[in-house]
Image (cartoon, rainbow, N blue to C red; front, top):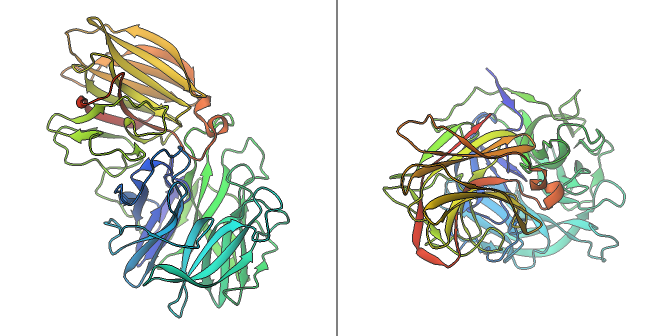
Length: 526
């Protein structure tokens, strides 16, 4: 029996994937930067179907993010398993640097971070050798001094896991497969058939991204270059190729002895990327003791045949249509995100719904606004939120937002103007707000329950509203149409994240004891 995986296997903002196998189970983690909770843990038994079972960094004590930029925070985690314990090693570039957390159950709870003194640089990984020793491998600036921006070296040092500290000497073992390469990063160390392999990314996480590999009979080198490097890239295919930025890969072996690679890539539209870097899958075969990615093809494919039985979870499809009814919900599903550390008073779940407090913190600040969101995962999608309007007084506003960064986002804000409800569509570009449309709403009653929509139509957006009734057959009214959203791309906004979409509340004056009640959130691909 076999199963077919469809690329990307994790659509939307799931960058920098790392994977490990434990028996028949696969576990995968991704970067989250300044979103909270950090580092989603995905589980699968066939590499094609995935469920999120938790988050590694789900407590503020683990993950300080105060004042972090959108693309700061957590970079490039690695997950590994050894003798009954799961290890995740990662970099918090905003606080503390490189650290290790552990768990017996990948769903959590995970330990407090053990920060590694002397572990400079970013993108750490762990390797367990046959003799039981553990080694740290990461990337840092050229120890002889950087000759150009991105002149980095990959280095190895032993780790004492009992004391959670680096021991012994530092060995700078590799600075990339190509001459004058920039940003050799994301290294992973493997051992197969007597060879040690270092697989890393090169060229930066953009159009020149690539996967390369070297090998040695000695863990500490010297390492020899693979003359077929890069073993995977799309940088030679031109701007019009539908999948780009391919790199930052990790290898995994199945119980059947087959090898696969996960990596990041993007799917731009009209050369603009709003969903960020996503997780893709490829088949790997070993030839002459070197890995060959997608033999006879050499690029990523839409589908990957896997020699494993199909596995379906009982959970709702985390990448398809779903509706969250908040009334009576005990806790948010693990795929929900907030910005930085939300604090205990940012939201609460009650018998009525999800209540977001009215903070004076806006989405434009490097702070913790009242914002709860999910990832945009499709070019064409529809997301709606249902909310009560009785608390929209005295400068309090609430609504729906599509968020790329503090400086680039789109939001629909409901407010009260006298006895009337008003909806403003506001596009923030470069940190400056522009009111795209302002509408007095045609609704019945003083405090109606409303539904707001964002509808992504490839590179444009429509925004709508309706008054909630006894059925789900709403009579939608248009707020704005044909809104160009290419400014919500990483090509314009910069950074490393993809768009999220969700619920938002703000007030002219901080009044956190007051809250707006959201009843539901729905997401579906179109």
